[in-house]
Image 1: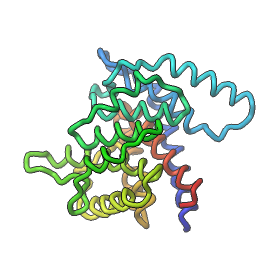
Image 2: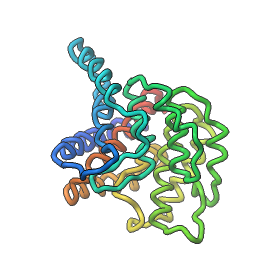
Image 3: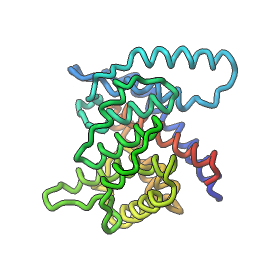
Length: 268
């Protein structure tokens, strides 16, 4: 199987699972919260997955949906809750990036929080990924954030729980890989490849998350992509064990699908 065949195969798998997750998410009532729900990103994710629709009726509907999405997206909201009640800071830039990728025009007010540096590597690289998608130069920020050693993007500190560190690593790897594919395929892709190898060799299933962060990186940079297969299996299994995970899973998969589409279009 050549690279394009692999990308096409996994794009189809990821798109199908993303749509399944979206359908499940629509059946789950989010918990009452002062913060908006991550479900606000689902229309943008669906718009992204449907980018190949060409006929005029669909194109008109897409433009209408873009307008509706833009006017329902609160630029002042920095925190979004999943249906479990968790508020992970990385959800915010993930949702903003999906809007940009779907062609939704966002105000500078929505983008301005992304220019604030963050201590956590996953949040910092995801903010950079948003700005990169908006056409801004983030090279210095990315280079400063990644302190790679033994393959890990940022080595685990003695006081860090391994499951939390693994989550941040995989989420950070997803963001770095998106940017490597978009604008810095050389050095940043080498960093991603080293991280992929590290996690394939070191990371145990007990320490991973059912959220398939960086699945596109594992698809591109490993052969066979066994870690990606495990991520998709875990994500699908968890959808049926805990339907409240569906919305975040759908958002992550739609974002990964877009990166694999870029790779396929480029013939990488």
